[in-house]
Image (cartoon, rainbow, N blue to C red):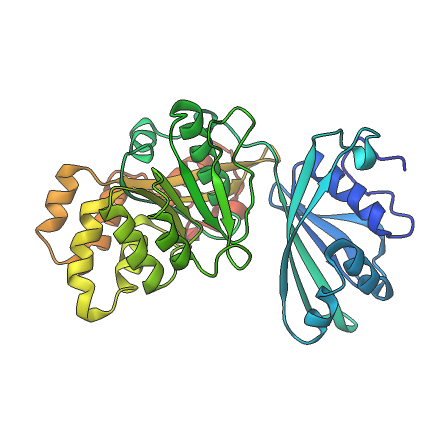
Length: 382
């Protein structure tokens, strides 16, 4: 089919599975981050944080079942219709004929979530949300990481956290860090536990490519993965997310045994991250675990992606590096105050995300509608 070079409406003709595969490759080439396919609605995508319509016609509800069977497998539809949302990752591979616009060795991957619900006039419409996973991991040196933060991120042991809301670039930043470590410390052994596996971290030049396990497919939980990891003698353990006591405890144990454990949380500030982490532990052991966490913690960063006036997006982050001086200061106060103290430091340094976005607004890099998503309107200049 004739694939347009420019971004806009895609020339769908019959909404076949092959057409959609071409469309997915086209989306990846045009830096689309998310694709939405819903029966009875037009095909739309998110590109640089902006929603764009990509089909002139609506996607027929009657085609959804056959498309899902061909793209994801016949076992998916019965589960979705029974009220069970399904997560799948699909991969499209190129070949010598250049099928789908991909050469041999090229591939694209999409993380997909399928669920049934009401959409407009359609009482029972299946919705597919797909995250396009870029194949190229960016160079972390091109990501404007502050020197003291980057130094803390490349450490021998302990705990590090990359935090933010869904779609804030956490996976991209973690993957860039893993790749940076592999390129500069080729004898490092990296194991990750992800939900799902997104970027493929290894390449053909690695002595030992990072080993990536997917939750639900290769291991039952993040906590089980961490317990397995310490028996595999890695230098670095990547944990997709810490969200329960069992995983938090296993991460501390991994740090105590000399491993570097990198993980994420869905939090809005470094102080909130620390408070949330300590809150995962039962009260009876929270005091002792707080001191263990303090001894291991290396850094916490929180990142957002801000839509800019040039049509792109920019990563903005606030962070704290836990050096010896700060560790000593925190040890002199109750752990319930640690999070507030950390956020106060960032506020005093005017390095909060909102401080940086305010400066961007003053420089006319973002418009008012974008700025007020992060800054109280009263703080903005007219």
